[in-house]
Amino acid sequence: MNRRRFLRLFYIFFFLTVIPVVLHAQRSSGGEPLSLRSSGSIDALLLSAPDARVLMAEDNSREAGVPERMGISIPADLTILNSGVWLSAEHGTRIWNLKLKAEGAVGLGLYFSHYQLEPGARLYVYSADKNHIIGAFTDANNAPGGLFATEVVKGDCIIIEYSGPAGSRERPPFEISSVLYVYRPMQFPGDTRSTQGAGSCQVNTACPEGNEYRDEIKSVVRILIRNGLASYWCTGTIMNNSAGDYTPYLLTADHCARSGSGNYSSPADVAQWIFYFLYESPDCVGGTVLPNKTLTGAIKVASSTFTGNDGSDFYLLRLNDNIPPAYEPYYAGWDISGQLVSSGVSIHHPSGDVKKISTFTKPLTSSQWGSSSGTHFRVGWSETVSGHGTTEGGSSGSPLLNSRGKVIGTLTGGESSCSNLTGFDFYGKLAYSWTSNGSDDTMRLKPWLDPLNTGLLDLNGSYNALQVIARFKADTSVIAVGSSIGFIDLSIGNPNSWRWEFEGGEPASSNAANPGTVSYNRLGVYTVKLSVTNEYSADSLIREKYIHVVPEVFPNPSVSELFVYLGMESADPVTIHIYNSLGQIMFQRTGWQVGNRFEHIDCSAWPAGLYVVEVHNVVHSYTRKFLKIAR
Image (cartoon, rainbow, N blue to C red; front, side, top):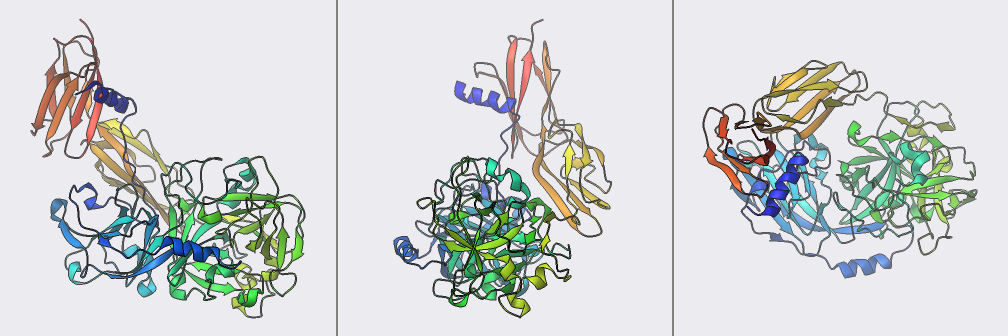
């Protein structure tokens, strides 16, 4: 072993261990694909990639008031019966793999029809480099009509893994009806710098400009729109309503559902829209995007029907799923007074980029986008300490907020950009959208956002006060084998039932609010899950690979001997190496597989100093520090 490897071992020890990060996304059950550890390879099915240069030229010629296209779908008809290969995995499990490649794609997404997984079935999608993983998707993702979609996975080559109960190979659980080919830049979870197309003047919401709007920022969502074979970026807002029932209404622009040819997204298309929550950078400049939190599918409940560029350009959806507490949803308040306020902000996803904030400090003026007067606010943006926010394609549908953080409008379009800082933008007035686009409930906001008919002119925003949120902490997450850890419930929302699951622990489960201590007697990396309920809702918190149970070395320090304790009997072979400060092997035992999990080592002849004990089993590696002292 060379000195560089030895130093790396010391680094690993001092920082406990290198914990692999699996970037799970969407509403899924987590875990890892069984094929992830496979060293074998499968041939890729090559898809006919579109010409990105032609697509870009088409985009550049589009008229104003059309959402920003980011990808085009490649028709497909792929099932477990007509494509892919079946492989054997650990414990005799059979898995189906399909590898898809579309040359030059920034990322690939999947649109499903006939998605109907059985209980116990699991579906994963991951990039060819195995760094971007989404899933597991299960029967919990089944929806009426069998429509489902996945968020975009990084790169031009992805792998799909399916495992199901016995007999599922004869009955296709889904059909991949098309593959989304993304040709515009995107920033993916784990990326350390922006690769998006948003202008350099734009201001991240983590900057000081966002300090007065921290709650409202959490109400803003990036939307991946589907309209036929084309896909677009837009922005939307989770809205509060006067009933206080936290119905997952999302407000965006009507033109976001309308393609360049004037065709609207069908109900089937809307059922495959993807909504990205908390898609933002934690830093004012640059920063890494965290794993995505997304939901799939919605239904339209009302819109202004933007025919002929008229009306206030609103589109109200109800998401198919309630928003999980982990997504930290804030239900934005609103103001329908129509006042020409003198200051406020817009929060948006320009070019589909991470969340940005633009600031205005001059009074709005009443304006219009089409032939009807008074439908829109006109706004000009101001320079701030961190930049000069404007809007871009992808910002469409974003909220205009007054200085009290209440939504007063939704973005239709305009002329502002980083190359035209003084250009004006136009936001459809909530005051107009309330009742003025038409007499039917499907053309007005009021029946949905004021279902109690209170006549309120404004309503405060709110987090979901009815929602229970699972939270807990442990005394530590790294312990020596044979030791115990205490767990404490920190859930909010007054839960009235608890269910703890301790993988690898004793006891393995508990129904107590605070389960006390749990013993871990086997080496490994284990998951802890807490499920809680109250009278209104339920929530679960899963911390994967949370508890790291490492070998114990004792006595430490020692003069003449040491023991390496590896826990309870296991069939897994174990290898032990001990290195001195020069990286030389002082002790070695390979393939050890006995019932007594102690190894006694005579170190009386070793020089005094610091040593590294390295232990390997089938799955994990562990390092411990040992100090030999002189007599």
